Image 1 (cartoon, helix red, strand yellow):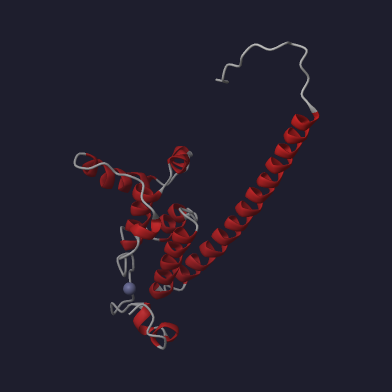
Image 2 (image 1 turned 30 degrees about the horizontal axis):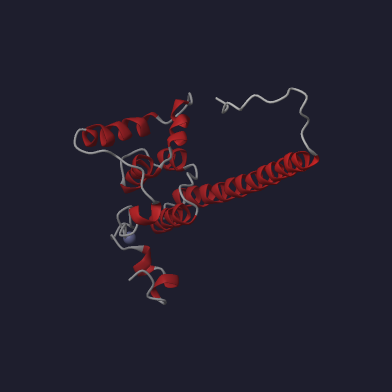
Length: 187
Ligand SMILES: [Zn+2]
């Protein structure tokens, strides 16, 4: 509801200053919506690229590469606070069994999603397995604690290999991949 204003004479016209203020507000709004659109387009493009990489890793069965994609998704969420990046669709479609990656999606949804992100779960073709996994995770927890939304940076701080599937020998790509080995990164 609008705030009530003291009654004033009905013939009062906006002054020119007011007019300018209204116009510049409109300009600000337009600029803001252009910026938002550009942001959204950029995010969608990045999401699409991420999805391509992840699915490529899936097609060539390269767990290390997919683990690296998971780490990248974490970094994105930390730097851009809560981007979804199509994780549910991608990860649930790529693998039909429970894995650390599915845990990653469930944790992300339960702890990091903003309220409006949950609107998506009402879509007709939303992944059923995800909804079941979410319920399994959230249900028992709700009896003991309140699930507050957290910041990605704090939530993933000590994630380490928590969401990695690793390769068949159990090695982390950070230990075996030359790009990481040489720089002793992540060790
Ligand atoms: Zn690892």
